[in-house]
Length: 157
Image (cartoon, rainbow, N blue to C red; front, side, top):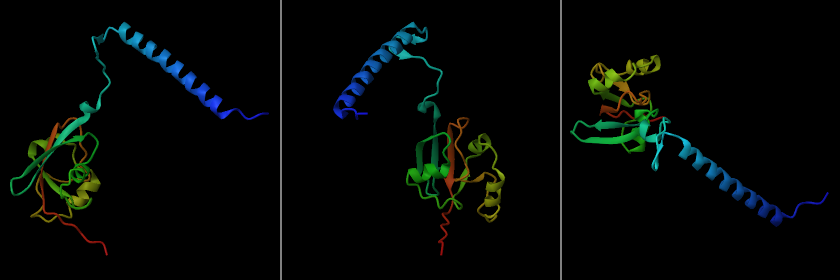
């Protein structure tokens, strides 16, 4: 057995890849032209795109400042806050108060979140309180409006 010539092998691979790409692009283009949902330069697909999965989160402070940011469905409000440099606390102390309309549209809190909410004082907790790290963004809620509570960062010894 004799090892293959590396430059020759590389040239063959590039040649075959190029031929495959030329053939597959013609096949795809022909399929799109034959498809009745292809109109002009726009292909009308039923497959969701990233734009279909973008919602907004508006963070409000006691001082009346508002920051509205886009976010992907499936992320938590905590992740969105961290990505946008919003000071919100750590993952277990990130208490937010939702706008009543936003609260009504989101799924109810799960047991883990309820146990975290139960650790808040009566002064801190409101009927629309949520823990941002548990609050997942969903397509049913195009905009989540939340007021930031007091940040309670606990230092770990």
